[in-house]
Each structure stands twice: as C-alpha cells, then as structure tokens.
Image (cartoon, rainbow, N blue to C red; front, side, top):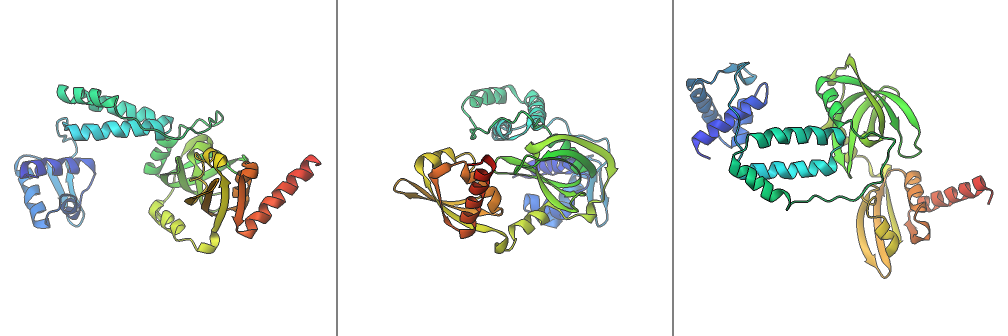
Length: 319
C-alpha cells in the first residue's frame, strides 16, 4: 500500500470510531508507532482536524466528514455476497436494514461497478436447509437487540422454551449476540433466574426495550461467556453414539448439527453418528421422533431415558 492510500485508509479508520489508539492503527496497517505519528501529523498538516488525548488516542473533531467513499470491484463483490448471506441468515429486521444500506452503497458506485454487480448478482446463490415455519414467532428482533446492547438497556421479553414450549416473561440485561447452528442467540443476565441465560432470538414472542440502563461492568463480556461454555468440564456433557438407518439419516440433515453432531461414519445400511449432548432428556425426545430408525449404542443413561419416556407415553395414552 502506497502512502497516499494508507493516509486515506487511516482517515477512514479514524472516522469509524470515537477514539482510536496509535497502537490500533499500527496493528491495522502493519507499521511502527513512529510511522503512525508521522502519518497523523501529515494528515493534520493537510487540514484534517485530528485531536489527541494523552494516553487515550486520536479522534476526528466533531463535524468533519470525508466525502463519499468509493468502493473497488472486490469490495463491492464482498458487500453483494454479504447481502445474499443476510437474506438467508438474518431475521426480518436485519434483512430490511441491510437491504436499505446496500441501496445507499449502490448509489455511490461508479457506473462500471454497478454493471459489474448486476452481472455478478445472478451468478451467486447462498443456500440453507429449510427450517419449519413458526408463525407464532415474529423473528424480527435482532435489530432492537443490537440497539439495547449498544445502549446498555434492560429488555423485557416474552420467551418460549424449545423443550416444552412453555412461555414466560423475563427481564434481562443483554451482554451479547452470536450466530450458531442457523440461529441467533441472545446471551443475557436473567433477573428471574439470577444467572446468565442463552435465549434463541427466533423463540422470542414479544420484546420491549425499557428506559432502564444497567451497568455493563457488573456483567461478564460475551467473549468471556463463550470461553466459559467452551471450557466447561467434560462431566457436564455426554458423548452419545448411535446407529442411524440411511433413510432416517437423510431426514436428520436439517437438525443434526444443532443437536451436537461431532462425527458421522458410514455403515452397511446407514451411519454411526457421535454427538456431544448437554441434556439427555432433550436429546431423547428428539430421537424418539425417528422411531426404529435409530439405535442408541451409548451411554446407558440415554437408553434408560428413552425407555422411561416411552413408558411415560404408554401410561399417558393407556396402552
């Protein structure tokens, strides 16, 4: 990258955040702190109003804006790919906001780049496994959740659990959002349970952002939470091995990774699947829907759980 391009990139980076540390600029553009100081001085001498706070970083004086940024073909293609991915993996609110942003981006593209995108658009497709439609859930809350996260606002929500469909009202302090296994998840401190909880965004029935502000420093960060889950003791999880008939394995394609699939090895008429499971009762309910197409090999506790659930169903229906 030549110096002119680097100075422009530094200016854009400064505009992207309220305060930017010199070390952050050095890491971002792979250069020394001495070069950072020299480039910042060059921008100041060129008339860019850059302020500095000792021990904090650099900032652009309020009111200054760089003229509209032009995108090259590679950047425009990356944005197009992002738009197509968002159409498949974003909820309604994110899809609408991303589509609006893309219209603004397309408006500043050169004519040649617009032609480039139009030619490329029909030749890119993002496919996903079809999920059952759940009309009871609006699936449009990721955008307001992001707003609450950024502003540290307490949320009131109506939530339906996956296991039994029971609906409850919760007041929570949001600490982060993450996307996994085709689902958006809200991690939050639940005031009802007095503990951190994982709420699937597509199971939220209704949501209200309150005017109450909570102190973020009292809660762990999203990354800390994810690290804790990753490093949970092995005895809190169960390794499940089962043999699955080929026709049933095909029916499992949509959900098997969501239920913790680790490995899948071919057998004569099916597959041996290995799962890492945190709740045997929940997992047993799922494999019961597969009938005799599944045989649990281990652990014994899961076999017992399945038998108990079958017996409970027989008792319930008087069989």
